[in-house]
Structure formats: structure tokens, C-alpha cells
Length: 122
Image 1 (cartoon, one colour):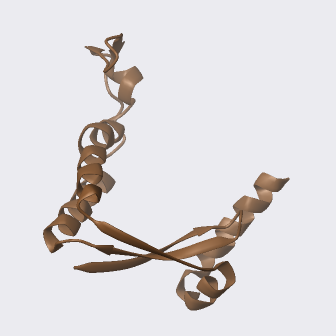
Image 2 (spheres, helix red, strand yellow):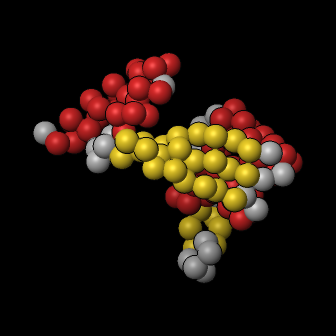
Image 3 (tube, one colour):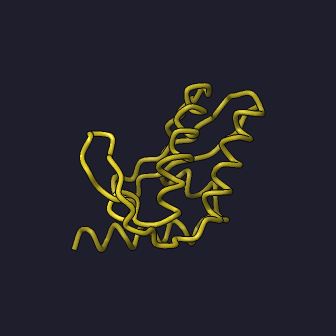
């Protein structure tokens, strides 16, 4: 299965299309994990003691802050990383202005990005 998308850097005015090639189930697992992540609310976690990956004492509140972040760090990110190992990605550079022309449906996104870049420069 193939999926097309694009990426932009509004600050440097660079852009590219990318093609991901993977078995359908890899793209589905990736999509499904992302959908679950988007549904999990940011419920604050209690300060339950734990030991972090470096062996230091910490707590859930300090380590993850909320339920959404806990899911992302412990479930979604590892799934995403594993699925990306199985994908082949091809990047195709394109001029920023040409990509913007090709996607008039996303013009509000480009305008928002441009405003953010202008704020950074100020």
C-alpha cells in the first residue's frame, strides 16, 4: 500500500512530497494507534513513585504529567517507531511556492504557518 503526503518548512521555505510504502496492516496499526492517542484526554496523573529508565526515583506526575502523555510515551511512540522500521519512505523535494499552489485546500494552514514564522523573526 502507498500513502502520499507533504511536509513544509515555512521558515526556510522548503517543501517535499513523501511517499510511504508498506503493507496495509502496518499503515493501519500506525493510523489506529494515532486515533487512540487523539482520543485520550489529558487527565493529570497522580504522583505515584516509580524508577525511570536511568534508575532514578521519580513519579508518574513528573515523568508523564498526564494520561495522554503516558500513552504517547509508553504505547504510541514505540508502535510508531516499530512501524516506521517496516516502511519505505521516498522524499521528493519541490519548491515551497509550487507545493502551496498545488494545495489550495490547505491555504489557511500555509497562512497560519507564515504568521508563526513572522512572529519568530520579530
